[in-house]
Structures are given as structure tokens and as C-alpha cells.
Amino acid sequence: MTPLAANTTTLLSLGTLILQIIILGGAFVLALVALKHPNEKFHHLAMRTAEHAFLIGFLVSFFSLVASFFYSNVIGFAPCELCWWQRIFLYPQVILFAVALYNEKVNKISDELVFLYSFILSIIGGGIALFQYYGQMFNPNALAICGIESVSCAKIFFVSFGYITIPMMSLTAYILLVLVYFFRRHHIRKLHKTN
Image 1: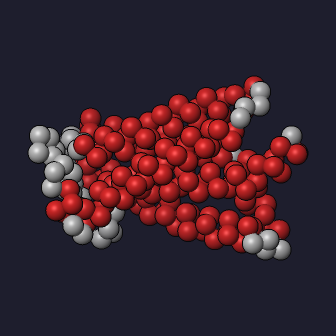
Image 2 (image 1 turned 60 degrees about the horizontal axis):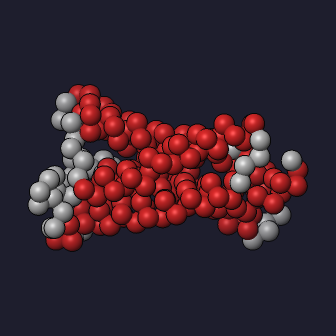
């Protein structure tokens, strides 16, 4: 691995680890708020996350797009078929959130639909990422059919921190987008009442 690839992988793996910690904390806060926990700090944090959900969704999807382009076009990791499918469910979300973010300031849009589309795309893409991760790490035979005519889906380009691979990075992004959907959905009525 070249120094550029190694440094990029270290940085992105560290970012993935930080996002996973944020996901755990966010899930904890969302669970407390959903259970009507009386702590006002948790409600405030959940409301702020919901208010900035378009921006968070855009940043997560955009940086995931940039990372995937960087790995395939600069570093030279050829994407496999399952990687392409994960990209198919991620790339439209960049446009979806960019348009929603722009229109949020211009006029009210149906954010329920934006997040419903994101949720559906993220569940499918995350399922593909989870399947590929499982195949790479635990059962390569599950991915045997993939890569007959192209790059093998079982090929592992790197493993950071003992478990982070490219499919794990993808899965982390999808889980974060799903979590943002639940924050927005939980607080959508409050947001509409205050605006």
C-alpha cells in the first residue's frame, strides 16, 4: 500500500470509528428521549440534531461519495459488484439532501418524503454492506459468485483496528443516515409547530 493509501485509510478508519461512537451515543440519546426521559439536555440535543438533519445527511452522503471516488480513482482499489450496488443506494442521497438543504431555506418541503427515501435507500444499501462485510470477514463462500467476471467481492483491501474494512465504512454511513431519519421523525411535529 502506498503512503497516500495508508494515510488515507488510517484517517478514514479513524473517522469511521468516531462515527460509530457517535452512533452509539445518538442511539442512547434517542432512546432516552423516546422513553420520555426528563433530562432537558437530551431533548435539546435530539432537537438540534433533528433541526440539522438535512445538513448531517448531506455531509455523511457527500463525504462517503468522495471517499469512494478517492479509493477507486486515486488509490486504485477497483470496486466490486457489491460495492457498486452500495454506491447506487448512496449517491442519490447526496442530491436528495443537497436539494432538500437548499429548499429548506427557500420554502418548506416535504421532509417526510426526503427522509423516507433516504431511509429506504439506506436500509437496502446497509443490508448489502452488511452482507459483504459478513462474507469478507466470516464466510467468503457467501461471496463466491461475485467477482467471476470482475473484482472479487471477498477481496479485502485493508483491515483497520481489527474490523474496519470498506464495507464497514459503508455500513457505518448507512447506519448514521438511518439514525438521523429517526431523530427527524421523532421531532418532526415539534419542528412544524415551532416554524
